[in-house]
Length: 639
Image (tube, rainbow, N blue to C red; front, side, top):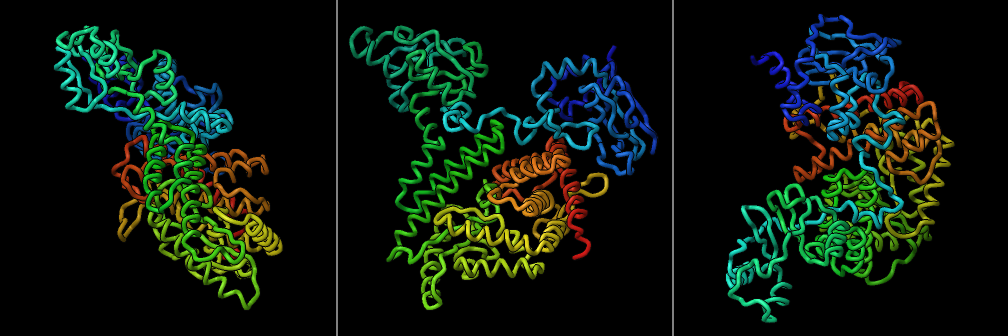
């Protein structure tokens, strides 16, 4: 007799990760052992420091709050489909928080003894639990799981990234398979290959790959007269066919071809000849894939003689980015590689622009990338923020010098726009005279921002402090950086204003962890990922690293990692913020690639449960770091 309650539980769990990764028949093996728990509003599920139960919980209906007992603050609320109370069972430790029903709730209690073997058997479930870490802890970023979360789940050695990128970069192949039977006459298949302009044809038997014939087989066996053209395909085919799975990397493809002395590989559903063929990979395909390798792209960039030639390079960079995200390459490495490729494109635009000028630059200059590009966090085609600083000249030569560099800056910003970087809506670009200054003028400007910090000055300085040298004189940028840090040290109240500005961005979530969306305008009912989640983390990292007088670290997650070393007592929070900034950037990049936009505004209706869950897991870091800023810099005094 069918157990209808058990089936209903299985149907419910199948809708939510990580149970969605399980086949239904696997789910149905343990759902009869699941207990249904009813909790009235304000009743306790478990208390802090109590021994873990023999099961963890999934919310079927209602909401369960995870509460810090010291101050009664609700740190998280689990709603339909959320898991809680699992970590203590996996880590053999007591509960760290109290779980309390925020409203009338129905829970599924799942025995841990049944679940542990499943975690070991199904890799996807283990990865999900590490990434989302649906637990009863304040944040999932302890040292135990460092480097194994959403932002950095793959194990990768960045020190050897140049040679190892081919180990993870997948090769592109042709999915249009032309095939024939072993009994097909050679003359017939030769005409077919010629008509389709292909260099290999697959021989299939009962729908499965049986052999392969290439141009080489015609040269060596037919043209030489060894086999007549009237013979059948099986007379010249290579069999058994060598097969591989479709997720083959460039290195694996090269090694496979060298090992077997062949020029074509057949790709099948499971990598064996026992499943359908889904593609054929040739040496030519491998060479084309090598063209999207970072080292090759950098060389191609330097060979460009016209700005419009860089468009194809930029397309290759985007293809590379998509591949890295699909393979879950660590965000820190992905960002570093893509940023270096973007910088290479920008440098070439500057070189080509300089060639268009009638004369060489009158004095040394530096092109500063600011904002997300300055932080090495600009992965998508967003707008440009830049500035140009030139060496100090006499008063008589100042305007003539500025005119030269403004003309150069106009060429550069136009070139960047041509290859995909939109003009800055606020005109924060070097082609604007306000952002094309001598080093002494920039010193004077930044001094005014720091010593008289109004809202506009705080905004401008926050953007400017993330600058990075993209081209030109390092001495000029070092001189300017030294001046800024000395001035900030002399006027510490500026940090309070900067911290206050960092707290202006609204919280990402409201009551019951609901996403706070835009209430009006073009993006009404969309979630602003940049303003509500990313910017609070970026702004907080900036002011905290400035307070420690640390130079040369502009990247947000690197700032937090440095802060974790400087303040061991807050290391867990800073590492949580480091992870969150990478996870949010990855999420924004994926959304941007999916919808062909900046990824800033997200339609929540298009997110699945897993995506919503992972996104919400980063929000506690935003709240916690803003509390640190508020207390440390006493921001109430400037409000």
